[in-house]
Length: 205
Image (cartoon, rainbow, N blue to C red; front, side, top):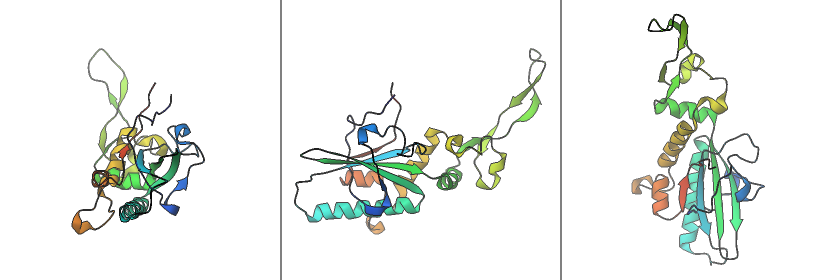
């Protein structure tokens, strides 16, 4: 299975040391960073015209993206960029991965539910005269993480849907400009055409 990004309408810009430059072509990066370990939670995309002269709008767009990427990094988001270039345009794909520490913090704030370790109880009904393990869930708590099933496997503890929810929360609340002018969040940035789009990856057959 692979991810097709050609179908996405997308846009992004160069932000220096905030992210790692991918060594692969954007069509080959699949679902993971180059290390093959960190699974991509979200992708931000923007477009540049390599032949366009420098303008105030281009400079402002780049500065806003730089600010946005900085605040995402401060919030615990790791980044890696892939670029696809033609004679008329340059597409930037910024892969995002939320660290374990950031996931725990924001999962608790968003009250995401997680499975508790099982308690042995007698199964209900006479048709099953044996003990069964019943699994309960409750709001995630970092202070009580030892009580949750699978907590020692950080790569799979949170579902992909939960990871995407946390990532979107971070994208929606990071500052990219003047807070008094409401310059906050990915939706505003797409509306202002600093990005073409932002999306999580979905597996396709």
